[in-house]
Image (cartoon, rainbow, N blue to C red):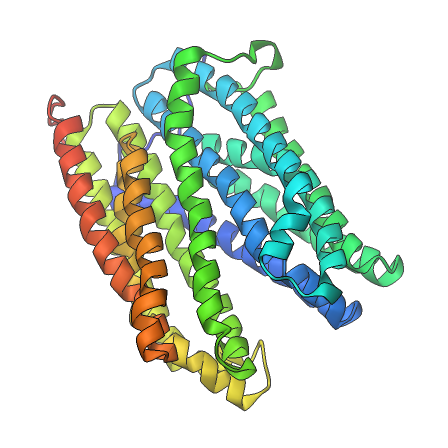
Length: 453
């Protein structure tokens, strides 16, 4: 069977990582912008109640989709490792096992979402006048969970072998369709909340079909064949051992953020609105930086499989330099141009100033998160996901909840609340980097030092 030409084990590492990451950045930004378009369409053409209904589901959507993204990360790591080692049979078995596991995870998220939509929305304190629309939106949106699982599976496979351009193309196509259907269903068909949700799942199934078609027509080692779909015991264990902790890690932040949001809600409406506006800028910056974390896992996974010890170490430092530098540049940019950026989301001067309170602190802190997230991605590339997840839960989740009920409760200032971000990142980063160094030494102890490339 022919081998793909997307090897991440040779060549100029700094250039390769940058070329690999740029399509990922665009993909991440497109997802954010498409989500914003959903909110913009429903808010502008369906009214404030419809906007509130969709907006009140954000935490739950992130909670469920985060788990599927984590499963995709597990697929990415294992395919990259076997691909780098040129173990064609292992690549084939991992791909076919992973598709079945991801579909099962998508169906599970669908069932849980349908069953838990009402109790979870009530638990979150969704306002009475919004809950009917929110339930309707979630129940339609969750029907797209299997498609989202398939797309993340395919994205994990393709990025593992060095192809980040085709997932970007498929996402772009489905995103344009999503916007067009949003406008059609909401404006022409007067479907408001149901229209936005329906447009979302149609676009999700489109992206899933496109990425499946790519894998089915491929002649590479990672090609998909329906007659080879089966669960291989060892591969099931390995995919789940990386994917489930990664999924939990993705989802757990949503739970911790509920407590932070409760702290924000203890202030007046202007502060709440300012925080919401600034959070949109946070998301854009985080998603740009996240491209380098995916690159870190993919490159380390392939080079670990290939037994290239020095290139593993260099990958970590290059990805860390890129993500840290991006955090510095975009963070300072958000401080300098913060008021202009916030004016995109609000015309209220008081809200803009409230948003700047968050942006000023966060702008100088984004780079710190790179130390934490890059170390997590590097450990995952070595196949270690459980301990990094436990560290994140303790350092960035449990710590934040404790901070909210102690330091923040004592001082009760918005600065005291926002300051928990850089503090928790610093603590977690120290632990994650220490763990990665330990894993690197242990996992690569028997590997040779190949000729530099």
